Length: 480
Image (cartoon, rainbow, N blue to C red; front, side, top):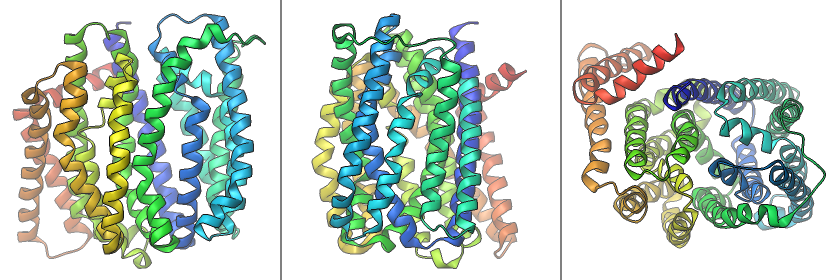
């Protein structure tokens, strides 16, 4: 099987996994939002940020190094495995000790017990993480998809059962732990048949991996903070109830990106890594990746912007009405953000985590200031500040990262973005005026509006953005 065929097959399976998991999480959000209070979602948002940040140190950037390096010995994998397990145990103890201080900082006593429970996920993840990475390296996305979907369904069942039993915010915690436990136990049991780590640890064997990972962990840590500063600062400055309102909108807005972006990026990383020394091929793959991501994301986010009120009121109820305007603004934020998303994959494929580290280090000082200034206008102000900042960063992102790593000109880069953007805006505008002439309001109008948008978008893409149509047809052929 050729690399292209493997990549297309990987896209199909990653797409299935991403869509299924996002749908499962979406169901969990809309059901639990009717049972739990905004403050419960606020508490979970804070604990998830702390756990998510700590998890970066367990991996230490080594996962990306395993995919990047094309020849790895059994001894190296064994040493890396035990390093990962040791890091998981250390982080479990660290978060358990840190929990009361985080609770004190936010003035929410319940955060302590939530963090202590979620800290168990570090050891659970450590035992199976390497096998997940090895499956990705070998483009075994079919197997990854089956495991991830099964564990996500199990987590949904546990979370809903706990919520109905009155567990409150702990329903979210037990669902998260269930997902981690099932996925990593399956990875471990099946992975041991292919690679069984020896009881050895040789630092010299893995020194190059750790060196690669140091910039990676620095970049990821800062990038993680950059993406979560809104949650951290809203929770502290505006309270857990306001954070719950904001976080629900953010969870809804981020879903399309969580579905679409991994489909391209997860497969593109190992493919780019294999051609990392051929700049022309790397550039071509990267530019196509941007076009595909924008072609999928742009129309979806514009639809989300227009249909925000319908989505919130019909899915989670009127008690979340304040989330509507936040969802609209964050739809624009994630639309703009999707244009810069593939650069992380390019950075890793070239092994230049240092460039990304310095870029995110600069953002580390800019983002919190923007969010703080926006917070004077509440959560709406925070959302507006994020959109404005993302727009301003678009050109510097191309200049400092994309151009240096792929030698892509601004014209080439810009054209991959502007075509799907114009087509999306035109399609949504036509659909809006057509449905407004025929219907007054209601779900039927919104449904017809969506269908007309999709029709015109595909029609115009076939004429002016046929690369996007071609890749979809290729995916259909691979599946036959």
